[in-house]
Image (cartoon, rainbow, N blue to C red; front, top):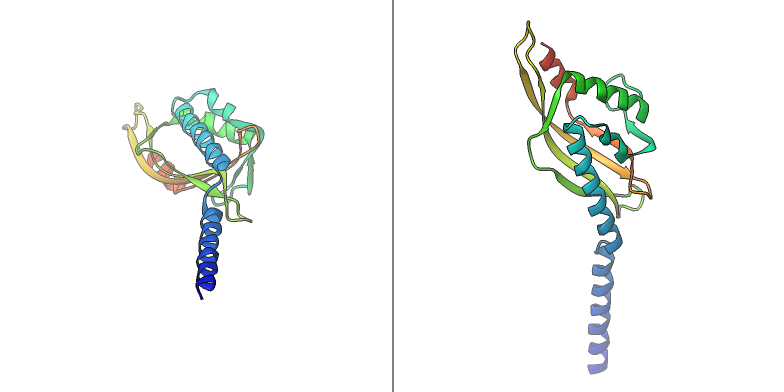
Length: 171
């Protein structure tokens, strides 16, 4: 009986070790996530500064998921670059809350993979003109960023009610 109990306890401990080890994020993935989250933070700083350095955080073949009604399913870096430069000429951007970045998961394996997901609140402002007063709105955004092996952002999705935000600024 003592032999049976020892085997059962040893088996239970081994099973628990295997189960908890399987749930631990890989240290390399955690390091990759930290580096990628730092890239996203710097990209946001460059975006709010309206700096062309913003675009250096993206791979040459980077794409964005077109989430607005009527937009293309996929937007290229060239399209997004032109769009952001146009928006910078009309609006100012400021992150209102601290970035809440979370590890993303591989959609197939459901394991963390170094990608970054985040929740943010941005203020978008439009300066006064001769015929309009200055305006600003806050918008909650959820964004996801996938990276290539060189640490450049290769896929981005942005979810939030940006259309309404821009419409309010133009009223």
